[in-house]
Length: 452
Image 1 (spheres, rainbow, N blue to C red):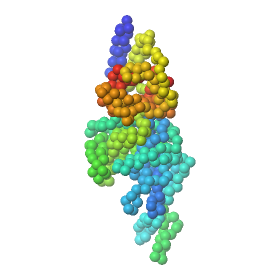
Image 2 (tube, rainbow, N blue to C red):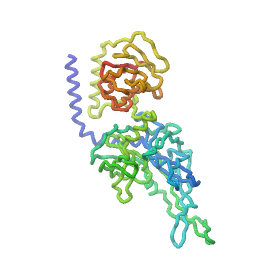
Image 3 (cartoon, rainbow, N blue to C red):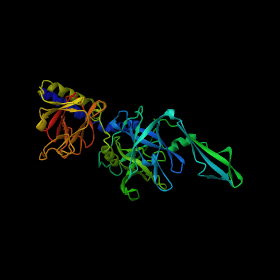
Image 4 (tube, one colour):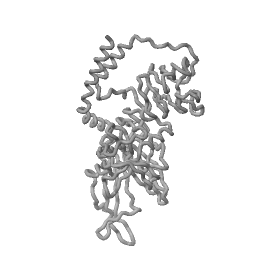
């Protein structure tokens, strides 16, 4: 009888899966509309070594627990630095995320001479900012080699969530559709640029008085006013002029202000950071690989691609049928007994406990108060396996708490880190663990369960 029920449910699920193609277009549109919630506009103000002040705007995107509000953002290096006359870089002293409209007004000044307008270094642009509509940021990291930086906002930005970063080495095929998300300045200039106007002031030079003209530009975009453009991947290449950085060439339109914004695929995953644009061809735009950011986040122990309890999703293809299948399986297995832990020494110091279910640590408990690495390398792990254990890698996996939740991440192991349901974790993508949940290193012979 139970087998018959299971087969009926499976057939229902397979039948619903046939509707995938009909739902695909709407799903993709919904994914992109959700992805814009991960993007913010950045303003950085820098005082150069000669005392001159420069302001710059750009875009950034959140990382952390996918779909949940975050305070960690990735942008371009050139958004938060300026170049001095000697070629050295000065990091911005003031960095903000712009959350409200009319947060920034810039006023350029020029001298009128012989019917022509001339910019002068001693008449710098005036920057008027409204910090009441901004959230201050700290620059956590600036890459020396590549054009990206990592920011931390003073608080989580309301409504701005972490995005999913594409797996390392994951390359979309040439011709695949991508989307560029950000805040191009041209979108504001269409409605807020005043044009050059006589200011009524004069610039004295060599005994002459020259009229000073000004042009005012107000940034009227709100944090939710993200511009989305679409295009295709043209090729993958390397920019030798930028320390051989690997880039994605695409034709999704980007302008000044898009710098630091994400390039996403049809699944909403960040595949690159929009960084360069060819001045002579709008179809030649370049995003640096997201792999560089992933590597740095791991080096800095900044969590990303975490999956919170709200992120457990049923695939669109199977929809409600999968829910029925899960419910039936739960009903059919409800009566199965689970093994009770016996008394064992407990290492204290955390809100979560790992209970050794099978293998070397079976019957033992371990508190998780901070990062707990598991593997065969005694220099890099807290729970160390014998080096001759072929199913466990030198740095196999990591268990770590973040804001009262417990996460598990595979560290690029050869045999994989597995959940009880048979899911193999993608490398360096944290998944939230629930009390009672089991996971395994390589095989079910080395397993743990979580105790709250």
